[in-house]
Image (tube, rainbow, N blue to C red; front, side):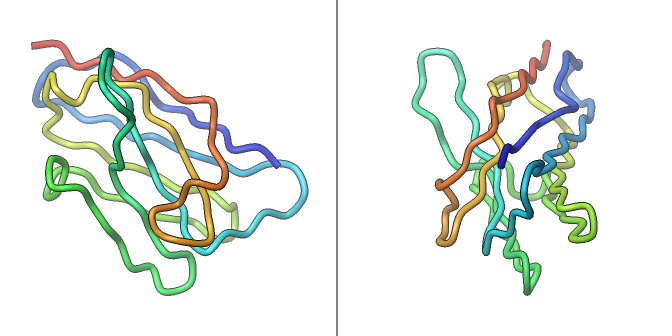
Length: 117
């Protein structure tokens, strides 16, 4: 089972990006899917998570109100819509899955998001 992210790139401050994460391989189900990020010289931090069954969502304070996590259960894909991006959002974003919150059992390879000022 692999988690593969896509949708990263370079955007100006105030812009938007949408990240996608698709699970491939044998059927993969996890109770919770999420996103973490790691900026240069900083520790990896939690960004957002969503419970597969209920759809309940969780956000870190720095992204609350700007980012939205959603899921498409038919395609086993999770999305992270990022609006009003700031230079401090620049990081490698990782898709994750797990059985508990925050989800850390499975990790994607990461996708770079760069926000210019």
